[in-house]
Amino acid sequence: MKDIPIIIGLIKESCKDFKNPIVTEIGDQTGNPFKVLVSCLLSLRTKDEVTGKVCKELFSIAQTPEEILKIPLDKFEKIIYKTGFYKTKARNIRNICKILIQDYNSKVPNEEEELLKFKGVGRKTMNIVMTYGFKSNDNIAVDIHVHRIPNRIGWVKTKTPEQTEVELKKVVPKTNWQDINNIFVTFGQNICKPISPLCSKCSINKYCKKVNVKKSR
Image 1: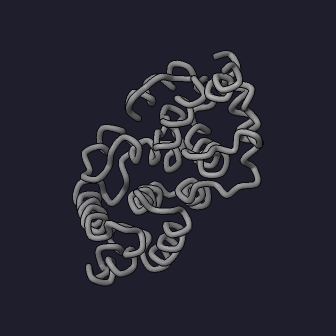
Image 2: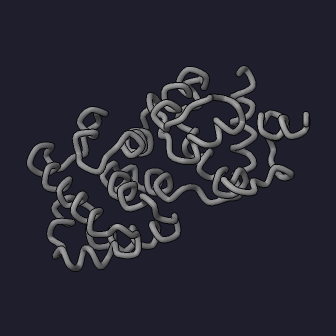
């Protein structure tokens, strides 16, 4: 596992010409935990280009819990409709806004346990808010790409994202934790795809367990 920092560097370099995940972009551009939280909830099971357009429209008229709640429900649902599961997302986001106003002075809490209390917020969303909203160095956000790729290349052998989060923290140097979600999502969307990965174009194929198993056959 001594090569992990090298591999992360190679992945990062190979992804520099691709767009960052939309939630990362919103975090970098705004430094606003509330926008990161809302955009992450909207991004679930939604392509980045759709999430980006919806977030741009929504944040042009509402940037705080109070402003979102001022939008009539039917109009709010219409704005986020294209993200899919829009009724559930609308309900969760509006409920979170109410709780933020009532219990947190309209501010997103900077604590894992508090974030996980919100309906619709799981470990992935919590970790993304902590990492890209609060710039925490103590979290690794594990989505399907961050779960799949370390298993594919042989860093971990896990069955669930939760297990992957625990195991990655054991093998990845902490200085790289903030990079993991961002670069692996970009890498997984463009190169190390779930089906038909572009192994011939991959900058880390010599380190990849899957590629090397194929070569040994």
